[in-house]
Length: 354
Image (cartoon, rainbow, N blue to C red; front, side, top):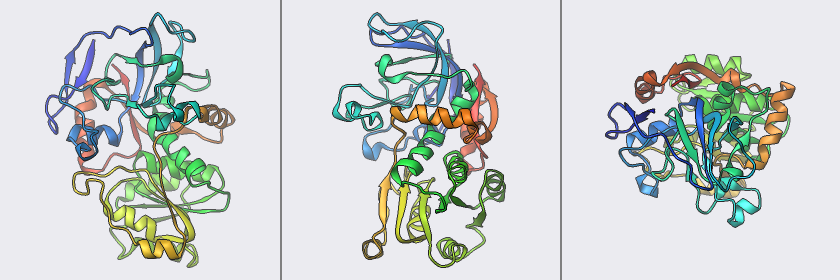
């Protein structure tokens, strides 16, 4: 089968013929119908995250936002059959650890991120295997198509968990979103749909225009102002944002996010850092202490939350398809991934031809 493989970090992916996966007893094989191209794929391709032991080796097949059709079923799998339409969360849990048993599979003690671990080859391929398939595969409702699900796969559901669960977003809240890539635009759309007032922050007018289309009530171009946090406090009448998200993961956006908050505000860190920060960012801890500002991390979304997300999509409250920027073929992937160097991708690119 065809797959996009890392030959060398930072060098273009190669489209190769590799062996079709065989399912272990607990696994299914899924034929990929669609897969999103994520900033996390770019990080892994660049060789980032070695500082937390999460770098991927050369020879890795990336891709962690898939939807597809079950093509082969392991002997121990009970709830899935060939032909089932499924979504696969990127954080593959074991189903047995305390976090999985409590409904927080995204925090699994032995998590294997799909496509981001040498033990879990990804979905930039015609097919891929899924560990503990009974636990990890989510059957896809008929009203959600494969391309839409791939757009929902990582960034959209991560943004939903960040706002609805980690920040406990309430109608009427001011929400500052720093970085309007796929997860940032998803957060804009979700915040607006849940009755909040999103403010979009980026340095590219094209992304800010897209944010306005998705519901941003105000925008801030960080390249045209001296202090983005100050601008946000002005927009909110001096009180500051109630919730703020760093959707990029560089020192400037994280610090701006925290500094844009008002008293008892909540910062949510979604973006993971690059080789420049290596996970270490200075923060105004005295101000955070005196103003009782909360700092939350947010990683993926618990599996138990998918049903709520699907209900909101069925009602038309949430429309993840609006975040999709372009569809492409597997052959176009290397160029698309490389274009992320300049942060110019608008919306979520999704591979639909393999």
